[in-house]
Image 1 (cartoon, rainbow, N blue to C red):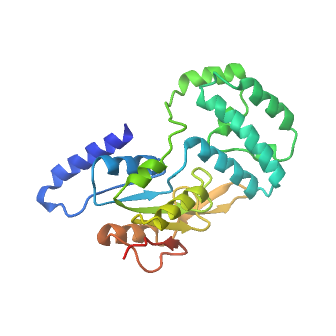
Image 2: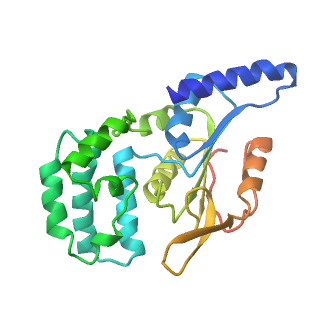
Image 3: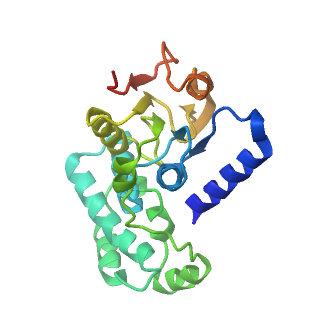
Length: 255
């Protein structure tokens, strides 16, 4: 549905531009990792740009976010394993709107709630159900009918695409963890796709740098250097070149 919305917007932009139009594209952040490749496959554009987006499922997104919670708080691999077990149980509740999995989730919650790592578990949406009892979850589920496709797998659309794509990710993104997405985009580049990947070390969701306040909470400070210039170059030239702050860039293997 969102891809079709993007297509309608693109077609209206083309109509408004008329003969003035040179190149046209889809550009977006976050959910755009799922939406933009679908739109590009359905209605051709010259290129696409995805910022801080995902090439994994929504459930995998939450799992990666929990793993990052554990890493940033320096918890052990064994503690991370427990946190991910709890996350899977909580994700089942969210995915089913509170209809399935409460007993298993609550048992794990009671089992682990006194362990030091428990307070550091947040995830992308796990945090929402962590403090709620069964009745509260059922009540909230009535209000939050997002119709989210939790198991939508974006890789088929990315493999099928013939459109040039620029992906810009941040290594410290907790909302849309980038490690697996970056690995998947790199695999597509290695397979010959006309994709470009830029990863900014130390950047979070929204492509900003951050500092930690006295409570250990993140405070965004500025956009990463070179972010907007990189997009402008790609829009203008269909490729990027040179340095863009501390971005680590993987270029397409096209000769």
